[in-house]
Length: 372
Image (cartoon, rainbow, N blue to C red; front, side):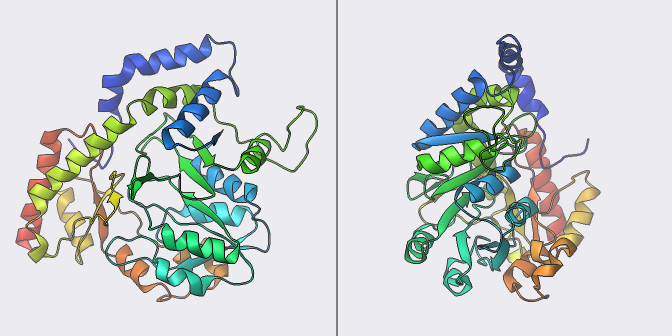
C-alpha cells in the first residue's frame, strides 16, 4: 500500500456520524445559501480568534483577493509578499490588478525575511502580505511597525496556520485582516472549497460582504460596487462549524506526529537532513512537516521503492513561473527561495496518520539516508 502525505479517510471514518448529520441539518433547514450555518460559522470562527468580524467566502484564493480589495488595494498598487508560497497567494494579488513585489525568505524557517521588506516599499505600495507558512507565524511586530509608518494595509495569509500562535496571539488576529483557506488538506479543512476573512474593522467587513455578493447590499437587484459571486456554501459552513470544535484536537494530533518524527529522525543531521525549526514565541501547528536535504530528488526517488510518495511545497517558486514572467524577476533574484525549492520536501502529516505508517516512513527514510 502506498503511503501518501495526506489522507482524509481515517478522519472521515471517525467523524462520519457528525459530518453526515451536518449535511442533513442543512438540507432540512430550508436555507441553502447564506443561511444559519454560514452565519453560525462566521460568529464562532471570529470568537475563536477573539476578532470582531468574519466573512465566509468560497475559497482561500478569493479570501486573499477580496481581503485585499476590501482594504483598498486595486489596479496600479503594489503588494509586498513572498515567492515561497502556494501560487494562489500571488494569483489573488494579480486578480486585484495590483503588482506582487517579492522579498526573499529566511534560511532557517522559510518565512518572509522581514528585514528585507522596508527596501521593497515604494510610493505605490498599498499592502504587506505575510504568509504564515507550513504552520508557523511570521514575526508580525516589524511588519506592523512598517505598515503603521507608511500607512499600509497588513493582510495575513493564514491558509496554512489555523490555530498557530505568535507570542500568544493566534494567526489571523494580528493584521488589519486575515485570509483563510479551508481546502480539505488544511488544519481546519472542509469537504470541498471554502474560505473566510477575519477583521476587527466593521467597514472592512461590510466591504467584504458586498464584494462576495456581487457588490450588492440592500437588495439583490442593486449592485453598489462591482463584486463577485464568492459566497461560502451552507453545507461546507456547517461541516466547518462541527470541525472547529475539534480544531485544538487536530493541532494536538499534528504536534504528536511531529514529535515522533523528531524522535525518529533527529539524529540524522550529520547525514544532511534538516528538520523543521520552531521560532521563539511561536506555537507550530505543522500543517506540513517540511524537511530539507541537498540530495532531495535522489531521496524521493529511492523512497518510491518503499511505496512512499512524498510532496514538495513548493518545487517552483512563483517568481520563476511563466505566468509571472512579466514581473521581471531573473534567476538568482531570490537566492534563498530558489535554493530551498531544490531541497525541501514534505513527510506525511495529518492528525489521524497511523503510527505504523509513520514508522514505515521513518525507517525507510533512515535506510535511504544511511545508504547515501
